[in-house]
Image (cartoon, rainbow, N blue to C red; front, side):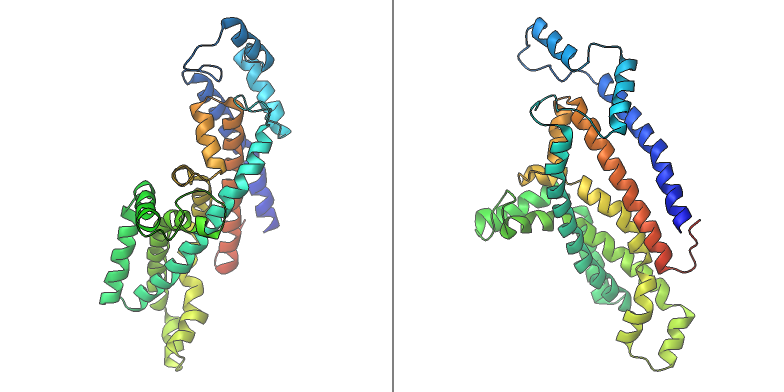
Length: 305
């Protein structure tokens, strides 16, 4: 397993290089620039700014300089917020996005797994159809629709919960429900399919023949194998739920990293966008590695080489 982990970590280097290269040249190819605004600044001031940040140099030289700084994890200051470095913006914004994503994923697992197990144990019964119908509804409603709807009902109509910000527990309920609802549906459906496959195995029939209770069979024997599809899904899901919370952070005015990334993209803030992209890419690769290792531990048939 150690060899497998080291091999995957080494593969991070060329992967991140490709991501960095594509991001660098896409940002340079996009129209506009970091110092272009609705009101054009004087040409001499713009030239001084480009000289200060090295944007007046050939693109190839800028690219090599960027790679050298990226190896040292130094992306420089944000062009739109010169008083703050990219590392400071990531350090301040990512914990908020991480907390939002972690609570949302926990919410999705807490609801999705029991719903999926219940549906599998009652296959083709009303409770199965009701559970999967609710899951389909959860997948079908986009978060940019669900978020404002929850705000309208629980904040503007019932006055139960605050509509925005990230100050206390009450502020976090609506964003967590909004972000986690889609993943509740996915996890429920994956749990159901995994459990249906396991409960038809011979060792489950043997356990029933021995007179074990249904609850003991489910929790001790079936659930471990039935959750394998969910474990496979957790890597990309965890990364996506954390890195893809941009809309939620905008709707609820949450000061997370996704919000900074969108602002940087709109403002052509090269250093901020490239720093966040590489950070998110590293995060995604590491999460997938963790899931692969967990999958090998859960299923003895899987050999990590």
